[in-house]
Length: 245
Ligand SMILES: C[S@@+](CC[C@H](N)C(=O)[O-])C[C@H]1O[C@@H](n2cnc3c(N)ncnc32)[C@H](O)[C@@H]1O
Image (cartoon, rainbow, N blue to C red; front, side, top):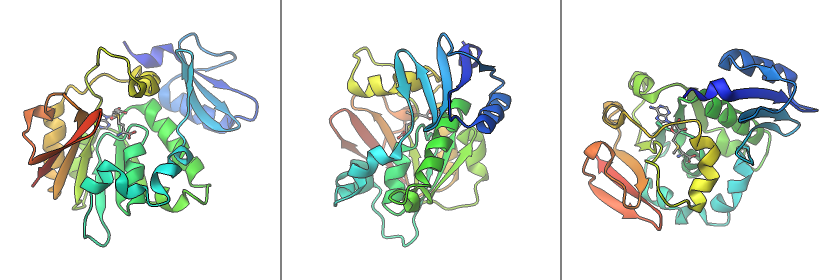
């Protein structure tokens, strides 16, 4: 099912009309005079949101401030795994989603290139990055985040950089139990299928010759592309498989 067939754009008062028209042309999705029946991209005075399933979702990096301030950043599992002595560390996030993990890496000093293949998620992420760029508490961090819209399998090998890290967090296979994380991602999950090209994604990551590939998986999920990691770090609901190259 192509989700774009069931998607409309709706402009509320104070919404950015020009941005709505640009996105409408880019996605081939109409601007409607009412909310859609299934999924709606809403432009209002706060920016761009996705509305559907009785929920409204907007990327907001300000919500992550409490994870990166007051010495809390270094308690983040991903940041601990990504620790490096490099003066100007570089990371590639090959499956960016709403960029939250990239934000943690950028807060830790990484210059991060993010790839997002889904045009709707990319639009939401772009909007969140743009708003964060106007917030002086976030500006420096998001200034290190560089979004490229497209498929990282095709585009990553063309990058002319030697990253410390390539980070892989493609969509987990669906779980039976509906947990908190799943609820938060429900809307986003409507937009994409679990990763079907794990091997290609892994090989594209290797082609950049990073020092490490960090792979986020469900705690008891299968290995990505069946690749055995050098080591694994486990959290409560997820684990990181780390391949040292
Ligand atoms: C689980 S989400 C990532 C969440 C992200 N780590 C975060 O912190 O917000 C996976 C995302 O990866 C994207 N994705 C999967 N494979 C991709 C690829 N080959 N190129 C670009 N984006 C990809 C999907 O569209 C989806 O938005």
